[in-house]
Length: 276
View 1: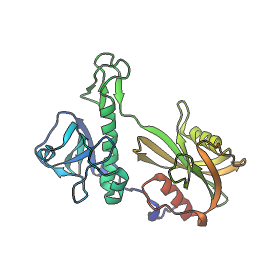
View 2: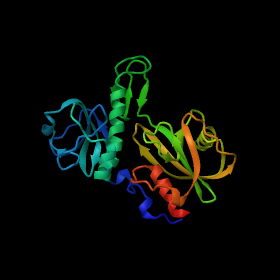
View 3: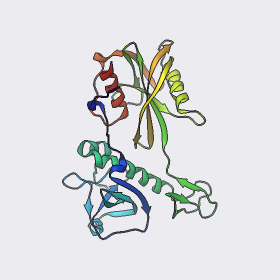
View 4: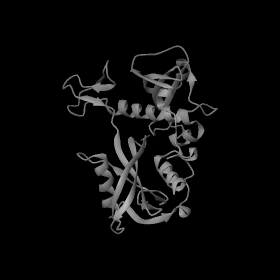
């Protein structure tokens, strides 16, 4: 199947411009990229709306909680910096509209920021943790508990019924727009089981011909989104009234085309429009 480029999210691999490494001690006097985040998980940009490519002494005016080296970005050292500030910084979705490569790197940087900040103490025994020298994980020196970064796998599915797309109004969406069915994977189930369960629980129908399409790191706050398509099999729409308020089938001409391609949801919706 040929996919129109207009429906594609970020096409480049993160690793085209980035090499993983980590260190709490490493510093450089040369220019480096500093991904600076506040407690709201917003990022600091320079006056020209870019990630700071500066020397360390430029950061002297920031009230820094920690600096963590996370590898190289565009052949320069790359750091996560966590700061205390009341200043208004830039939400990550806005960075996507400014510089997609910087946004892609920032999605990793913010997740590393969250992991390091949230695992300063062992969740098992409460002891102060230390950064492991071999793996990027926080190690408890007392009980040996290992604290790796955590992601939450979640599914999202575009369901077709003879050229119509199932879309629903979610109770937690601010503007209550119609969107696709999505949900988190439960412990003990497969990804495929999660799709069938979420559709059954939220909409009350059964699906078939489940097909994996692509995935996306979604740092709001820490999901790995796994995108699927499927066909309607049987049953009547019967929303749960809790997470889902309404649901119905849309002809492609009735679908409001997403205004941004930042999310895999937009990609799946645009893919449906282009291929039906």
